[in-house]
Image (cartoon, rainbow, N blue to C red):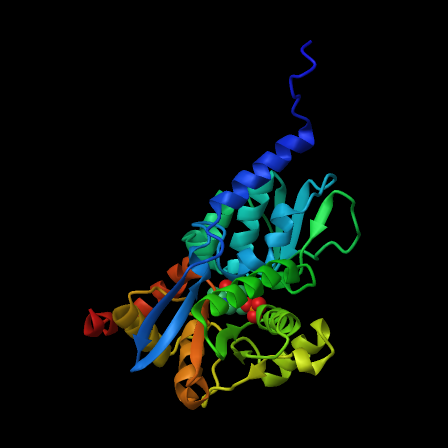
Length: 321
Ligand SMILES: *Cc1c(COP(=O)(O)O)cnc(C)c1O
């Protein structure tokens, strides 16, 4: 045997695969710029990281994509049957060659009979769905468990990278002060982003603002406390003038989404972003410095929301296009 011939070991091979995978992701994600309602905004396009693995779930699950897990054969999580996290985890499991087990309380008859959106795509990726069954609490060496929505410390690795990208971009642009806005669910993305921005900056010039979309302010504060007790690292919470229930249909949300699509040519998410933009516009005096809105993906989840919105407000879309 030729002793100079380099023999690829299994781990070399996985390293090569990992490098190829990393190169295929659009990182750092691009920053675009537009005017909306007479205000200039920068937009960090995390929705463009990859066609399947994108948005803040790509950031939160980044660690699981690149870390070595020699024993793991199965990825296991739980949550709603339409969630963006569920879909992203199904992509992650497929990329890593793992089985994917997902636990939901229930699936509506309509969704079962007319699979669409995240649910359909996750099933197509091989998701094993467990409906109405207790989530297994025993620890198994070959099973990797991920909390609902990625609310856990491992999320910080990908969000740290996001923070680094933003600092590098701000320096390149020579911006003095920067406000970042992103709407929150569990608050994990907003919290770790503020935390790492605080750590990286000698003098704070970047400030993270967010708003609760899933629960109320108390819920969001509690989520922040669970992940980081030191309040100096918490983002600023802004509240919309009207209370909304997560996942319910509101004409003004649909209008905001259509106006965004019409004026900016960007497809935003229909669950979080209409609330996010409402809060930004309601508090526009806070965003006089350069402002970066974080697009956190979730566009595949729009399929089910759009079906419902079009059924409820069949003529609204024509007013915009
Ligand atoms: C999951 C998700 C959020 C919420 O992220 P958290 O880290 O839980 O706050 C916001 N927007 C979109 C599009 C999402 O998919």
